[in-house]
Each structure stands twice: as structure tokens, then as C-alpha cells.
Length: 203
Image (cartoon, rainbow, N blue to C red; front, side, top):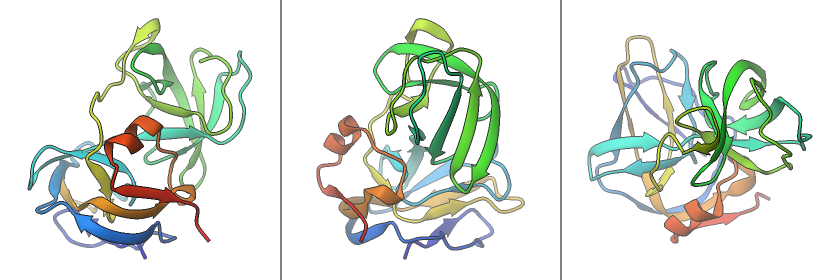
């Protein structure tokens, strides 16, 4: 079962399904994340790729958005599974070092962890399973990922923001097995950066 770590008040709810098959190694000390701009009740789910700069240091989530259906080249509405929903005004791009970035005009939650996003311009043809990432700007060819870090592991537990929390803490798994069909899709370059984390299908 995937359990929570919390913000400063130390309360929360369990994740709906287990995502870890086995946890063999956890980075000592974990890390802290600034939740001041995060909504109350918001959850950063177990299995989210994160970068931990040092033991007990800063924890940076790497949010991903996985297309759950094909999108035509001119389509501006994309349904995605997401670690955390993007906000109106954010920019998105297809996962790459550089490419086209577009602005998010509308976000509707279809059900837990699945959102329909309306963009101000089409990203081009997408296939089910394609991964999007936050971009630094809207640009036809020169956008780059907003957070240009590689993961050092995956969150062991959910991080839940309670009323009054400004900081949360998270433990980072760097060796283990995770059910990849129970989390948002992880691009191959991220998997390569975490060679001791094995991705497998759930039973």
C-alpha cells in the first residue's frame, strides 16, 4: 500500500491503490518541498518522479502529463493522466529538450488524476501514451522544459497539503519495483536516470 507523508500538520488520506511492488532503497533524509502555492487538499502522488539535490535538501517534483487517447494534428483538447493538474496560464510541450510550447486555457477534472486540458493552440498529432511536460514559454519551436532536472528517484508516499501547511516532506525511493500502469507514464530518459528502479505491469 502507498501511504502518505504530510505537510506540517501531519494528517491526510491514503492513496486509492498501491503503486509499489517492492521498496528496497530509500534516499537517507528525504527532502522538503514548498507547498505555499499548492492548493489545500492537493496531493502529489506516490510514484511521481522527483529530484532531491542532497540528503534532507530540496525536493523538486517533475510533473508529467500522459495522453490517454489519440489527438488529431489540429486538436486543442487533450485528455491526460497527470501527477498534478496544470493550472490555467501554464505552458505545456511534448516531452523533449526543445520544441513547441502552448498555453493552457482551461482545465477540467474528469475523475481522479484524469483531466481534459484545452490549449490555446494545437501541439500537433499525439498518440495515446505520449508524454507532455511543463514548458518555460509558448513558442512555435524554442520552448524548453520549465524544470530541466533529471529524477533521482520516485516519491515513496503521497504528499498531501492540509490547511495551514507551507512545507511538506517526502521520502525518495531509488531502488525498488513500481507498477508503471498505476502511475503517470515515465519517459525513457527518466527511467535511464533511475537504473535501480524497475518498472513493471500490475497484476
